[in-house]
Length: 164
Image (cartoon, rainbow, N blue to C red; front, side, top):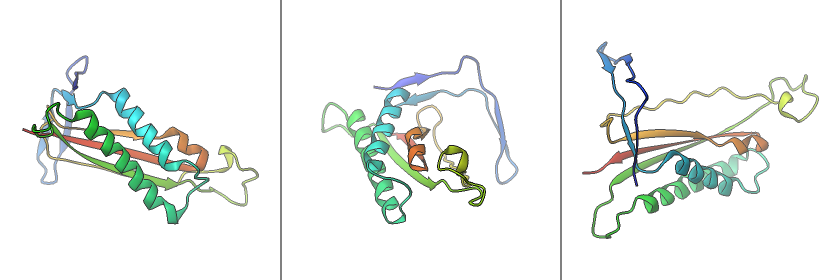
């Protein structure tokens, strides 16, 4: 089931390409394969399952956590968008990206406790780009809020491309 999202008014966005070309998008219309609420539920459940029992950042385990998050989200998206007839091609292709960042101490000498006031966030910047049909393809990003308890930041991104 696809949901169509339209902004209340036309959106104007200007940006410059690498070669100095200027582009302008005056209307954004996104056709999603899964509603936002369902995407949030899928991502939250996948992150929760992967991080169950984790007490903090563990370099030896972070690759497995990321792999499990990606696998669970892809599996749920494929199941949610599978055509009724198995002979029909899938309507969408997906990519899923999962990033797990360890939160760290800002100043170990100044830290007196173990709560949120004594921990800081490490800098991170992530960017994504794509060449696609803005009416049929899209991207959604999610930050898993429960990871704060484990001093982690988990950000998941889902990209979809309509087929046919």
